[in-house]
Length: 90
Image (cartoon, rainbow, N blue to C red; front, side, top):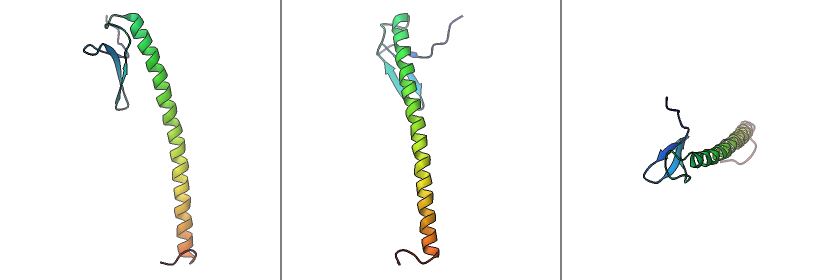
């Protein structure tokens, strides 16, 4: 029974590839699909890249929440100012 590989071999370019979150990532290790050492190197490189991508994504989520909170606070302040006659008159 064949095993399922996490990466896909790109025969024309002689490299491994991975499709993740709408993007392609390439790893130029190995000479062919049966080169197990090349696959191991590519898989290690993919795992490092995935960790980097997921870490960046978590940080972006955190920054996004802070940004949305600041915008909401500013909008609430602007509303309070309008309701209480504070600030610039237009």
